[in-house]
Amino acid sequence: MASIRRTLSPAFHSRSYQNGAAGFSSSPSNKLLHNGNTKHFPSSTPSTLLFTAVNLIYRRGWRRSFYRCLFFFLIGLLFGIAPFGLMGTDSRAEDFAPPDLRPPHDDLLLEDPIVSYVALGVNTRLEEQKEVADSIKPLKQLIVVTPTYNRAFQAYFLHRLGQVLRLVKPPLVWIVVEEKTVSLETAEILRKTGVMYRHVVSTRNSSHVKDRGVHQRNAALEHIERHKLDGIVFFADDDNVYTLGLFESLRTISRFGTWPVAMLERSKNKAILEGAVCNASQVIGWHTNEKSKRLRRFHVDMSGFAFNSTILWDPKRWGRPFSNPIRQLDTVKEGFQETSFIEQIVEDESQMEGIPPGCSRIMNWHLHLDTGALVYPKGWQLQKNLEVTLPIK
Image (cartoon, rainbow, N blue to C red; front, top):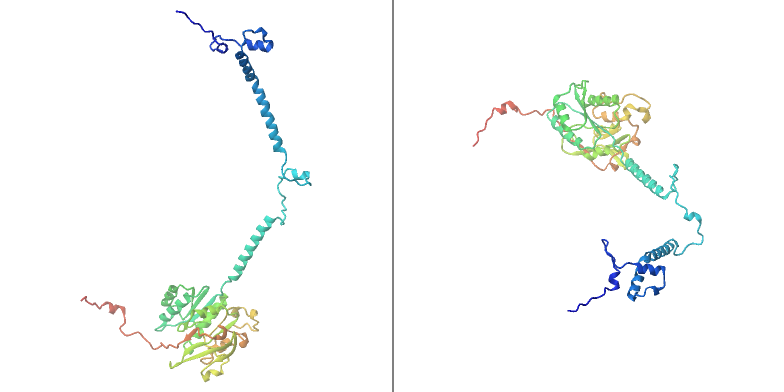
């Protein structure tokens, strides 16, 4: 059987083999480089020449790619550096200078818009806070003087007045004056009211005085003068009825204030009015109903006026020519204690202030409740009541 033998193609022989395997060497290509005359290679074919050209391109192609990348990089760099858009013709070198990174001077000018804005905001807030602080002025202290003595309704009167004073805005001090000694019952009532108080005792004998509260009020005035209490002094008897508006109006008094008081007659058959007649805050006249009292200079009830406490211990402030202590007199007739006391404080109605404006509102009542003869029912004792036992039906 005939055998057919094929000759290997030049492309096959041109492959290189690993592990030392010999193949078609690259000597034809080397010869081609050293000797450009292809006549020495009669056995060369077109496929061999093509392979040799591809091999040359493969060996020399990285330089061309490198030069191309470098060329395009330089073009991109030039485009990036070159300025685009409109530019002013008055460009200066300072415009392209680097920023000054030095720290600012200590004497920073207030013309800086940011600093000026912050400073303006702080100043405005401080001014607003100052205006609010000025508008919130501290209230004047009220010094309420109450003489009291042992009688049937004493506990009821003190409880009622204490609950009213508890509703008044502080500062307020309640000076309660008793005769001879301090009673434990009164002290317990004062502690339970929740009002700041001072418990004072009058040692003067009041048995021969028709108005037993004269010496008690004088003891309170002496206490105020000795301790130099600053405020508005108001004589509030425990058996009177007061409104909260009265105590708020007392704080508007500068030197001496007065107002009308409604009261029941001794016969309890009608109500009368006694006190100032006002035009706004100016006192222009007086209400009075009893002929015997028309001889008085000032027709005022004991609970119908109040005054500044500094008149007692600072006479120079009010231009008083004498520094004699201001006290109620026990030598005058009944009903004249008020006017004789007021004459020591003011000269005439021009130094008075009518409250409220126009004296158009009644703010306290004097009821004249006589309880001296009233006693507790006989046999009303706790021990006897405990002996009674009621069976459950």
